[in-house]
Image 1 (cartoon, rainbow, N blue to C red):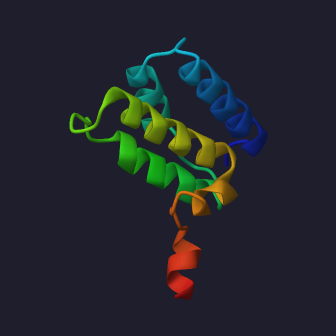
Image 2: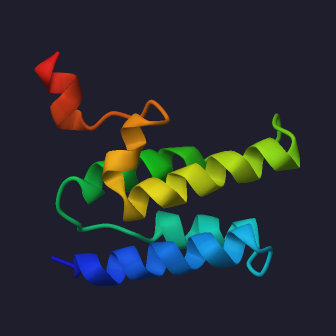
Length: 96
């Protein structure tokens, strides 16, 4: 099992650097796709983010793409924020 504090710190750092334009989307994409092995609720956030980053997105404006990317990075660090943008965990879906 990987360290949650390291995940949160890394996700927060990557979020800030990407938002400021100091890191390319492809680097963020590779970082997200390389994540794994974290407990809930971070596991669901990582799965959702990986699903978003896996295909190459070409149908969105650069601004919309970046906005979505930043939201997925935010929910990796703060999984409870996923509910704000309509992302639900496996546990939430199973409870319905």
